[in-house]
Length: 268
Image (tube, rainbow, N blue to C red; front, side, top):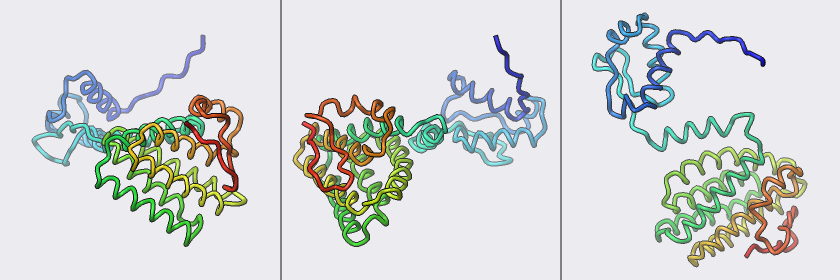
């Protein structure tokens, strides 16, 4: 059995861990106040500088709301989508998270968002989605691939908002932001990027038609097809295996259609 060296934990880190643990156990709840700085100094037997450093870290992670020197003590934050988005962003950017995993997660999120948007979106939601589609199409016509990833992000964000699910919207925005970087990298190595973005804009129009027609399963299937085809000819074998379950319902393999010229197999 192999052991690893014991890591020394600084005083402020020990304070952070104790407060985090108290929140996890429910001993401290959103809205509760921590003791003031003087009391924390006494309780933890540390200096004011150490207490303030611990509070700074806790505030940076969103666990507390604090003002230096406030005699009333810091407040345990209420949980919010912003905190979830920050944590998700840190997790999704870990080196251990592969492109295949990101694509898997994106297919789950975006297909679900499209299904819900087609079922539940309001006329206001649909108006925004159609506006984002026009902006995407106009951008492709005028600029080609120059600002394509930005407009795709706005288009997909409008669909996620129309899903009426905060968790889908928050997590989707995080993954969508990271995938925007992958999308730009994908286009930078594409020999015929103009054809690819034109085809993607056409796919976006098909998706909006399905949402407008209130066809949840069709909208979900179109989204899976569109995302997969965009990356298909750049995937390695392991990534294709990771995504195989999502495209298993196709009437045959979805064509990568790298140049955007040939007809792609349609998902049911």
